[in-house]
Amino acid sequence: MDGPLTTPCNIQICEVSCDSFRIMWDMNPEDTARATHFFIDLSRKESKDPNRFKHRDVPTKLVAKAVPLPMAVRGHWFLSPRTEYCVAVQTAVRQPDGDYLVSEWSQVVEFCTGDYAMEHLQQLLDKAKGSAGRLLKFTVFYRNQQPDYFDYVRKECGGLMRPALKDNSGSHGSPINAKLQGVFFSCNTEFDTGLPPNDSPYGPLRFQIPAGLLLNPDICLYFADFYCMYTAYHYVVLVLAPVGSEGDTFCRTRLPMLDLSSNPFLTYTAPQRQGEEPLYCHASDVILEVLFTEPVHLDQGSVEQISGHHQLMSLTTANAKKDPSCKVCNISVGR
Image 1: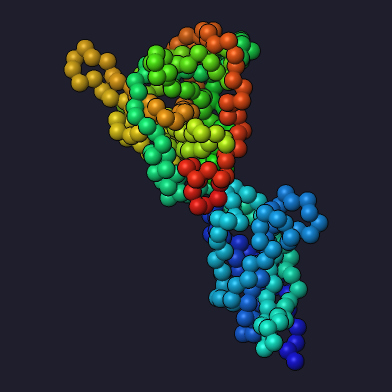
Image 2 (image 1 turned 30 degrees about the horizontal axis):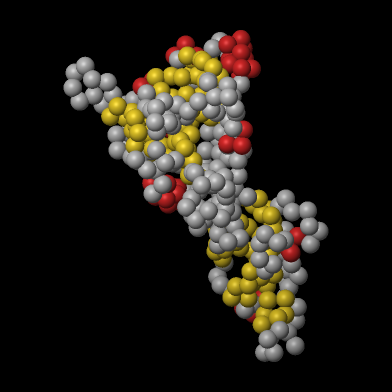
């Protein structure tokens, strides 16, 4: 009868992506020669279940034939981006009767999956292009807030709206979440008036700034996210960063860059003749959230009360969670 297998030790995790990782461990030579299968157990770190390897969010056990280590573990059906996991391993020898001789479970190792890579964002971008709709003209970017916000900006910040850290709303794997700072603006207009809407979920005061101050040839445009919140309409998150700025450096290796004059979401067209004004257009069928990565002074625009009689608080996207079941805006690498 075969002797017991030794417990795997020195567990190492490497090459971690948003939905895969490689794992290796130490075994004695005899066990390496005997092992026919590996068992990999995963659980989310935040699980409070005392039986951490029976967590409902992931398979109880991944069974794989023994292969040379490190072994790749991948699958968006149980791994999500930017999520902390616990993992442990067993080695096993399949017996002639079909049963397994198994080692003890190894120690538990923790790791965190990564952000969407450029290839995943390109998939998301391709999906977003299909929902953008036709382009409509606009002339101003705008930002709605409560009166207290603008009072604070005037009194404590010298009139400067300073960049704030992007929250975790939208796709969980977006590289800008909780990492990139900026000031959010909108630019969507009403079909019938060509003007910004009269209502806003963010506050009754609106700061408006001429489009050309944020969107011009000295600005780089990046695609950052595409998501919905269990609704029929979708959001596209774009980043505007001055060429060579810290924000531009951050985005350049992480986000797909868009052509300012030719993309489905937000465009700048230079004047064709002397005396003409540039043309600015936005996508009609998605709600654009535009993150400008530099401070913006109130003196560059104006603050006015909007005329809407109600505030649509249900439409706010602050820390909003993406609908994981939507076939329009999800890709097969987690949420």
